[in-house]
Image (cartoon, rainbow, N blue to C red; front, side, top):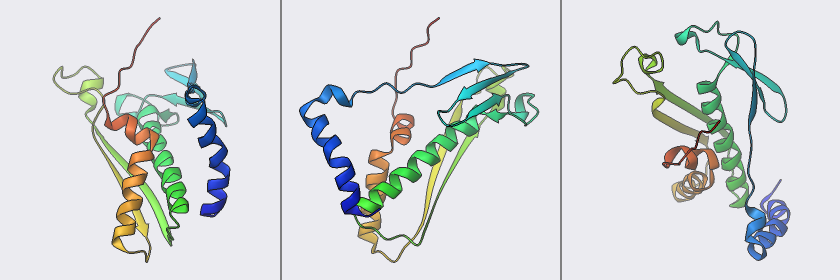
Length: 165
């Protein structure tokens, strides 16, 4: 796909959302069903994934860890956004890889230390891009990728999450 094809694909949607802003408000949903043992099956839209405890909390390592899945979602979103932005600005890449790392202190999750945080303390996202494009164009690519990556923006901003029963 080239920049023109991407514009042709997105132009009708952009016009529709400009004329009808409400049409752009879509609620994405995730669903899981509690499984056997300490697992749950997640419907991803493309496959069924079984999530379970991380080995550091007693898991057997056979089920997907939700922390890993969060980082995977971040790398997937950043990678897709990177490619779309590169296409839109005609940025040529020889190679691109997205790596996410997150630091967890499992003492918090296991209730071993009440002062230890539950959840990721730090997340690092690295875009390994090989290209002969000039630095200013690379800077633009990175700025726009960061700006338009849904998962990155969600994680980097304080969002209110409501839990109910």
